[in-house]
Length: 111
Length: 116
Image 1 (cartoon, rainbow over the protein chains, first blue to last red):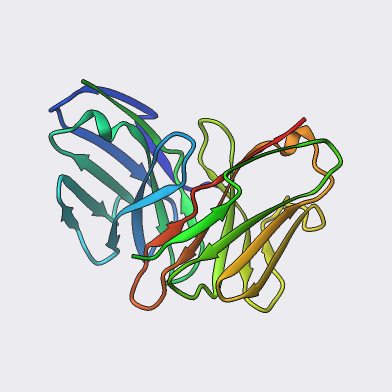
Image 2: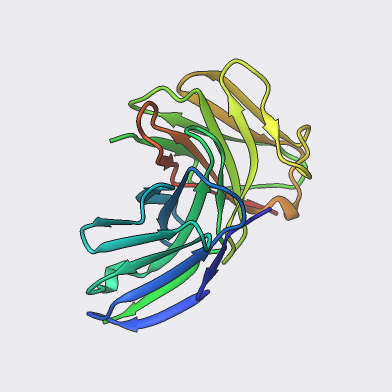
């Protein structure tokens, strides 16, 4: 069963705007990861944040983690039409163990 | 970077037949691979964890006799959907960990199975 919940389920913005997606989880984690999936394709790993980290950046991506609230957010700045995809958070307990995925956010960036 | 190759990317089969999906780690050894199923506009549901040289661990509700998993080498895991039915139509995705010091997982490109 999926333990993660993401909101919003769908987000539509204009190119150049920022997109923020949120993820909540229920159990203790070792790390939280964000993935991107283009329609009908596999997942691409975007960024990983460990439980002892609060914020991480990678290019136009910024991830925050609040373990006290069991939540994370993914911010995509200066969005582009090519960012249109589904975004999933996934929590992991220890290295090499199973991931538990959230329900995903469908992001549409309009040119 | 770590690459996982999954084949076929799509397959159409008749009810009652079996379909094999392959997942290969191309540039790393994957002791463990994971098989997921995804319905349209939904998240990934873990079906089973495939361990090299041992029996796969199936999630609750997943029929192991229907979804046969073989992980005979450190670079290849296969999922066979036996006696396929239309309700087995779905998107199947495999993933593997890239190994030491890397917590992210690499995913195959997925297989769209349509059973007619």
